[in-house]
Length: 111
Image (cartoon, rainbow, N blue to C red; front, side, top):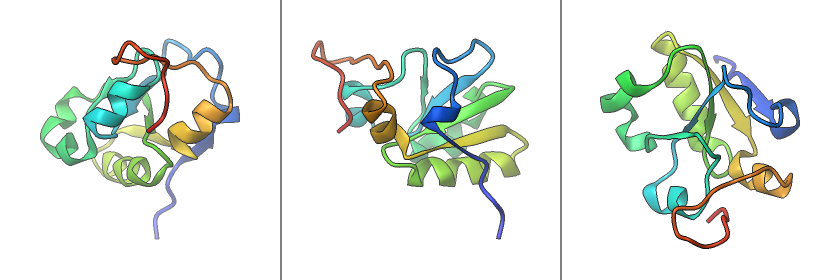
């Protein structure tokens, strides 16, 4: 079994450094309610068709709890990308008090 490169929120610099891209693979409704500022949004189900939009360099991949992002990291690694899964996902990000933005006009939250 292949090991999925993983990092916990405590291992992610705050703020996220400019050289680290963030890819959010959650569904549109989840994204709208709260996401990491500057993240790119490609739902997991669209990743295969949109892989050309994934930035080069190291990519931190996030979802709600880390399951979908782990799948994305495994697949992206097979495509030659330097991808790392955020263990605990956006729930741990939010619990750590890390900044988020919302598309709803309300306080950002993980749904």
